[in-house]
Image (tube, rainbow, N blue to C red; front, side, top):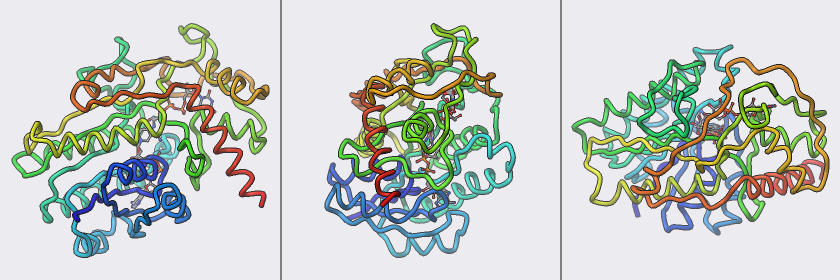
Length: 342
Ligand code: NAD
Ligand code: WQD
């Protein structure tokens, strides 16, 4: 049976997507060099699905090693997650981000084109929109000048895919994620990064468990309903399922080869930072230690998605809200901490 190559399959969104793919009957193989993950994720995937997924610990930047993977495996579709993703770090180390995210993807696309891969799905980000005058943002919302090297890699990688598949026997989905968070319902899989997380929800759960002293809320004087920033938090399993649906869409007869289609993946609901804290407090029954500090440079006041295109074309509809995100993120954090203490 031909397989799906998942790059970054040991990372946060990649591992949850493998679970959803396997549960929908797909066979997967991963390429992940453990830059921000570790091999124990493969056991967690196996314990949920009953299937052992093989990972090649190969750096996408190493083209010769990548070519070998394509020789070993019969691959017909690629879901490309592998990238560095810390906005602040990308400002400090732009060349690292350009080499890893852009050169890695060029190597992957070259291998894909040489090996007659039909379908390509890419992890893009709502960061490409910057702050839009019109909310919610649609796929037609103009792309803004990138605020960070990380954001620029997403814009460039989207363009590279569009240009390189034109007139080729390959089609693509460019998936713009809003703010992914939460864990698998079984609490056997969740976010386990090597680098300390900087995103709001894992920071909240780490403060809750006591591994960080407090949450700093970046700004309370924005023109939003409570003064804190608004984001569209999307449960990681809803997001994972969007990849399965995108693959089914590309496999259907509705999409021509040579096309790269963009989809927003969010819930359409905005949540403020203070509402997110409140949600954690409701789920945990505890008070969170937080303080309000100055705005964080580069933060936009508000963004949330119009996902009607994904709903119509992919048949995708997110099922979970901020409460489900907090419940699973908090449950996962407690289990993870117990395992670390053991
Ligand atoms: P993650 O860091 O958990 O997963 C990425 C995985 O890719 C890691 O396991 C890492 O080891 C691997 N990797 C990185 N560079 C590699 C390379 N050169 N060769 C092989 N493996 C490599 O991140 P994630 O949150 O799962 O994000 C997945 C994708 O989604 C990324 O492209 C990210 O930019 C994008 N994205 C993430 C978010 C978010 O908030 N998590 C939002 C929008 C878009
Ligand atoms: C959310 C809100 C912060 C931490 C980033 C990337 C974006 C995309 C998603 C990859 C903001 C506030 C946060 C904290 C806080 N990733 N916050 N205290 O900034 O929307 O997007 O992740 O593509 O590209 O930029 O997500 O989780 O960092 O922040 O007050 O300690 O929480 O100011 O309003 P963001 P985030």
